[in-house]
Length: 260
Image 1 (spheres, rainbow, N blue to C red):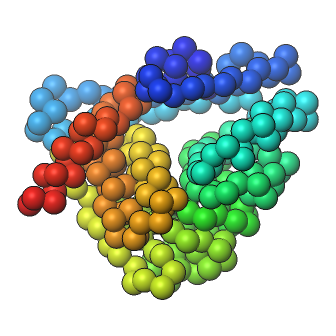
Image 2 (cartoon, rainbow, N blue to C red):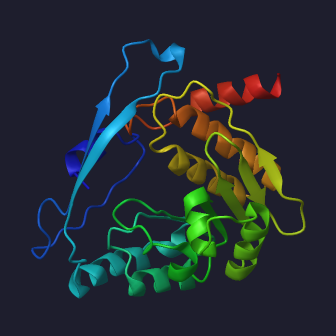
């Protein structure tokens, strides 16, 4: 990622650690999004339309030495945290040795294994991971897991949860609904809370982050799903990753929904 842009948009409490290597080019991952910006106010609910995206990605994954450096860093920290959250974008860093170590050592492991235009068909949750205490995936990703286009979403979600030994599993279906699964409870369905969408980029990441926090605390899946949807609703009002979701807005949204 580009260090300068990502650092500028992170929350002040976020501590970052960057890994560099001579074997990696300086622009290992550079993504440019060209968007058609509407002239109407945001309150009109006009969404940014992405015209195209150009990605410059080094196809050579990081070498063994860099992977060992990353692994050493993880090994020194992993036992100090209640929750380990993997955001796997399929760009090459999370190779076998790192994934296996995290799955073996993490106390509570939440996974978001994403499909995008660069890794389509190669970054599939049930092929990359054998364990996930919690996970989120979208409609395209669960179709790739199943290997079929026409599927029963609830049945596939339940089956994937059993396969991975999952305590919480979520299927986000954009503007339709989000399905949440927890063993021993009925699958819950929750519609999105925000209809005036500006940009959907990062909404799934926001959902995963907050839902995972609820999961590690053992909250009922209905409450965890509600919290994740609140985070997603805030994220779709932000252009790209211009700013993180805010606790104050999250609590305000929760109070509004609960009083509705």
